[in-house]
Length: 280
Image 1: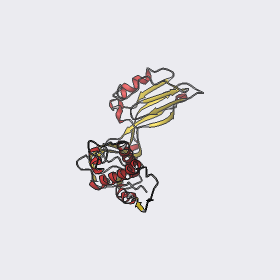
Image 2 (image 1 turned 120 degrees about the vertical axis):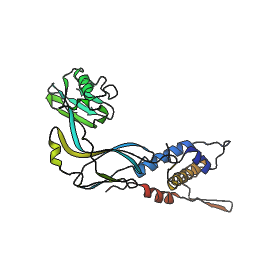
Image 3 (image 1 turned 90 degrees about the horizontal axis):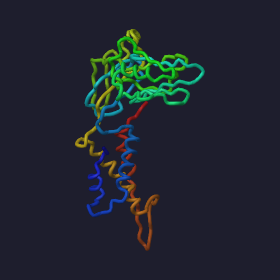
Image 4 (image 1 turned 180 degrees about the vertical axis):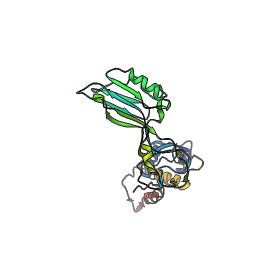
């Protein structure tokens, strides 16, 4: 989904059904990507996951707004499985992506089918890893076998050679007593997010990060009008210059006539700065 719809852009550019749209779609998509990158937000409603390193603060600020649902806020992580490789004097690397576990021994992919889609639980994934061979071995930690694999947290380049245990983690159980400012994305927890951290070190728990899963963003019907206007102004500026071969021109004089090319980009950037995520 783009910030402004294709129909809104064509109407703003005053292009009718019989007009040649040229590369307006390409300009539209490029401008949309630029705005989202500049603002550090995706804007359209979706489910997001974020992790924060806590330091006794009582508030966290989510990247995406407006917030509609907090699905879970978890303080710390729990180890649900360990992966090792029994070989020595070589390389055995474990990578966990958003969709699968990748096992690389001596530069060769040993993963077979270790996707979360094919192995829905930790128990199933452990069994699949143990069937790989090449020295790979996995084990469930405590009673964590029933955890679903889509909860597993991403990590990259972990060495498992010579029976070095790579810990695979999920977020802890969710916390309650939260206050959420849906407009600013501020989450406040009474007593700070690092409340009683020592208890998290028991029974395979580690106190490292705060994990938040939430739903946020705009739908087509409630996308801010000033944001849509900023996108359409920038599209018009670029598309107009491309169409008229005016890229780089500020003014043009010919046969006693002159034309000054207006640049509304500064007005656009002022609007975008309202929606930009400023990180300190």
